[in-house]
Length: 215
Image 1: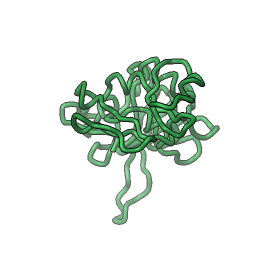
Image 2 (image 1 turned 135 degrees about the vertical axis):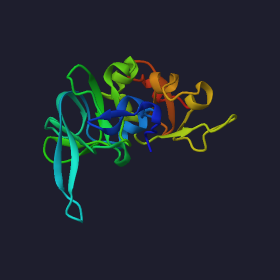
Image 3 (image 1 turned 180 degrees about the vertical axis):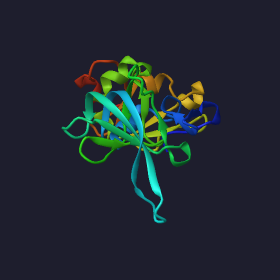
Image 4 (image 1 turned 90 degrees about the vertical axis):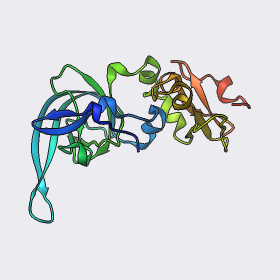
């Protein structure tokens, strides 16, 4: 599960409760990039409630449809995403986005029909301005280099990896927050010998780092 929700962040929309996407992420961006598709940068410019068929009892199924203006596709189909769908309430994993057109988001989810995707509380969605420079740059190439790696949480100290393809994530243990130094400024990447290690920097990893024997 990539998001955790708390009652202190609920937002009422038309009498229905959903959670702001900005307050739900609880994993680093590195593994999330590899799991979800599409992954886009977009601005939300409209919102409406739509019918999506009927349930087994004949009752209409409602969804929120966000109209988006895609700025960049990092991963996904060649066609631009124009609509993002989500459930109408948080009880069924509905996500709240700012539809005034003033805020840009990094949005990941599941591709649906041509030009649309569906998002839930389990997807990685963050305001673009809240991402670090390293995170923004890593979306274009570096996160792909870690898709064969595994992020392992440090539950308590001392902690260590159990396999060379693991990267130990310590933000929650040491800094008591999800968006710590590792999540914001490092990427877990695979090296030439098959091991994985945290890499820091905006520029792509140099050959010397990828060929190093020790993590």
